Image 1 (tube, one colour):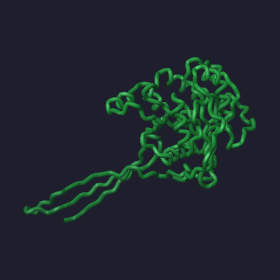
Image 2: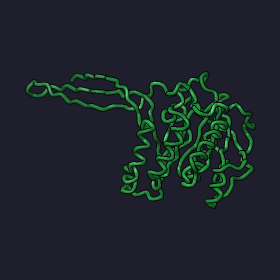
Image 3: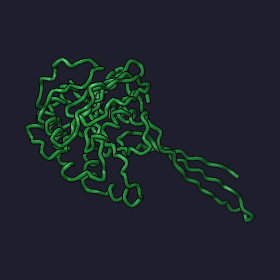
Image 4: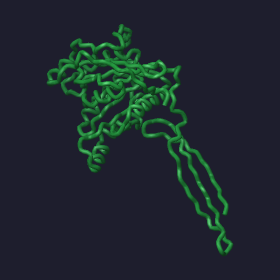
Length: 293
C-alpha cells in the first residue's frame, strides 16, 4: 500500500471582506487487489480560514474610531456597550456621543454613537448638520462605519436614508463600512431566510462589499478583530468628510459625558417621545486589542 498527498493553496475572500487561504488536501491511497490491480481511494478535503495576516500594524493606527449607524437606537447602544466593555450607552441619543476607552499596548478605541437618522421628519439640511457634527466628533475622521441593522423592519426608506448619509460623508464610506445584523425576535428558520432575502438588506450588504456579521453569539474579540481588519484593508486611513473641512475644533476629554447642545435632530428625537441620554456615562478598562488578532 502506498500513500500520496497533494497540497494546493487558494486565496479566498470571506463574507466580511478579509483575505485568507484555502488549503486543498488530496490523499490517494493505492492498494493492490487479488488480481494485482491497483485500487485507488481518493480523499479530498479542505481547510478554510488560514488568514494570511489578521494583524494590524501597530505603528500605523494607534486610535481606532468607529461610528455607529442604524435603524434601532437600542441595538446601537448594545453594540456600543459591547465594544467599550461597559454599559455607557443607556438611552436614545439625541446628539452624537463620543466615548473612548483604552485597549492593549497603549491603543485606544473611540465609539461615536449617533441619533436616530431614520426619522422621516429629518430634513436634508438637518442631515448636513449631523454630518458636520459627526466630522467634528471623529476628527480627522472615522476608520469604520458600523451599520447596526435590525432586519425585520429595515425598509427601503431606511436603506435610502443610510446610503444618503454615507454618500454625503464621502465616496469612500462604503469601503470603510461593516454591517452587523441584529438577531430578530422571531428566530424560526423560515423567518431568518425571509429577512435575509429582503431586497433593501441585500442591496445594503452589496454596497458594503459583502462585509457583514450576524449578532447572534457574536463576541467582543471577534467584532474588534473585524473592525481592525477593515482599518487594515484601508491602510489605516480614516474617512474624511469631503464637504466640511473645519474639523479642528477642540474636543472635550476622552472620558467626558456626551455633549448636550440642542440640535434640530435632537428636537426631532424628543418630539418622537424618546428621552435624552443620561449625563453620567462612565467607562471601564478594555483588555481587547483589535490590532493584534
